[in-house]
Amino acid sequence: MRWCAYGAFSSHTRLHGSSSYRVPWNYDTENDASASKALAKFIDAKHRLSPYIYAAAIEAHETGVPVQRHTMLEFPTDRNTYHLDQQFMLGPSLLIAPVFTTDDRATQYYVPSGKWTSFWDPSKVAQGPLWIEEKVAYDDLPVLVRDNSVLLVGKSGLGRPDWDYSDGLEARVYELSEGASVEAVVPGGKGTQKAAKLRAERKEGKVIVKVVEGSLRGWSATLFAQGSSSHLSTVTAGEDGVSFTL
Image (cartoon, rainbow, N blue to C red; front, side, top):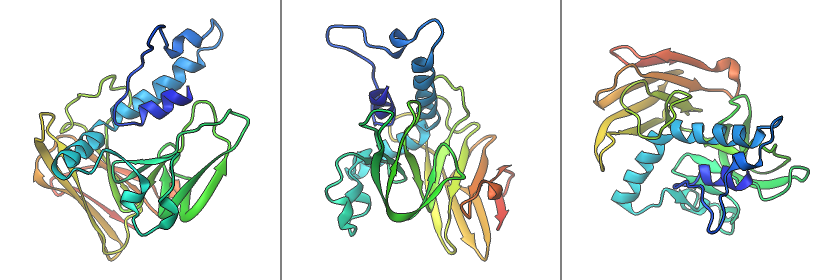
């Protein structure tokens, strides 16, 4: 299952074996379907993240920067990242730390400078730079979202990666700094086609998220701010986008 978690948060995901049928449900029993449930959790997350990953693929095509990239590429002045070989960045905003230990042993990973929010539990925020050592459950994986990021996600239970990204999209804005302006591309689903572009700006304690190119239907925005789920709110977008006051 550790390899399934790693694979689900890689640029390409596939279950296969060279001479045997290797799938998580082969490890389930009549009274324990934990392997299948864990895989379903990770694959659902990847389906939800499809527009973000697709946008990273467009970036890779246009600039040569890989979708799945060494941490050093995003933090070239942080010498601690130069020799990290057990973690990586998926696109510019997600830090992935695959677990290579058994459940009863702790794993370690490095968090560069900034505020990093857990993808699974937004109440957990790490202030880098620091090393984290923790035991990670069988059905979990450290996935941290970088501050000043706009993460594009879909609804849970999509069941496929190639859904209509311009309909029902959620723009998650993470720990936006005062004066910051961040953009995110919404892929059109065909080659390098772009359906829209979103921009999130913070000025004088107000965060505004709006479409600046193209168009979206039924989208919403969620603000992750001040390192606490009590400051989290989701708002359906109107004609002028979404506005949050901190």
